[in-house]
Length: 270
Image 1 (tube, one colour):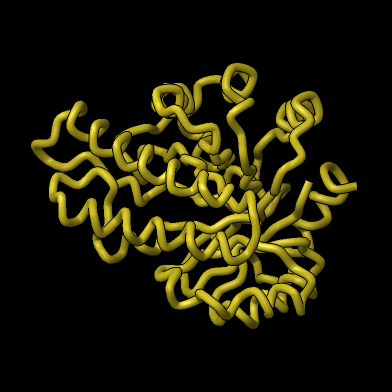
Image 2: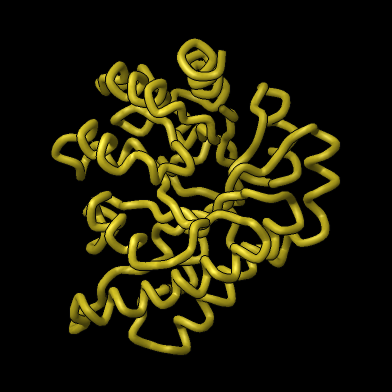
C-alpha cells in the first residue's frame, strides 16, 4: 500500500484537506511527515504543467491521485443540459489527465462532484446519458496515457445521483474501458450503504483508491466507526493501492496527521 495525503490549493472551514495553501511547499511538508505520496486538490491543472515533477523528485514523492472537485466552483458539470458547459468540463478533465501523464502512470483521477447534480427539469435518462457519454470519452482519453479514472459515489448531502456503489458500478459495467474503477470513501460510503461490508464483498473488486477517515471525517479513532470489519476486507481482498488521508485537520494539522499515520502503520502499512 501507499500512504498519501490530500494537499489542496485552498479549503473552506472543515474541508477534509489536511494540508492547504502552496502546493510546492505542501509536497515538502507531506514528505517531512512521512507520507509516500500526495493527492492533488487543484482547480486548474494547466497552472502546474511543467513545474511539479522536479518538486516531487526532490522530495522523493509521487502523486497517487488528482481530485477534480475545485473545478466545480466554476460551474463545471459533466451532466449539464448545456452542451457548452459539458464541453468545457471535458476540456478541464482532459487537462487533469495531461498533468497526470507528466507525473507518472497509473495516477487516479477522481470523478466526484464534477459529474454534477441532476438539474431541475432534467430526467434521469438525460442525466445518465450525458454523464456516461462524458465518462466514456474521458476513460478512452486517459487509457492512452495509462491513467485511471475512479468514480466516487457521494452521499445525498453532496449529490442527488449515483449515491450508492450498486448504482455506480452498473454505469461502469456499461462502459468498455478497463481503466475505470471506484474511489472508496469511507465517509460517503458509511452514510449511503445499508450494509457496507456486503457492498464491498459484492463490488469491492472495483476499488482503485481508499480515502481513510472516521465517521466524523476526522482521523481514524476520532469517531465511532468500527474499523475491524473493513480492515478484514482489506486483508482478504489484498488491496495494495493508495490509502489517502482525506480528513478534517482537527484538533490541528500536526496532531491529525500523526494520529492518521499511527493508524496506517499499525494496521495497513507495516
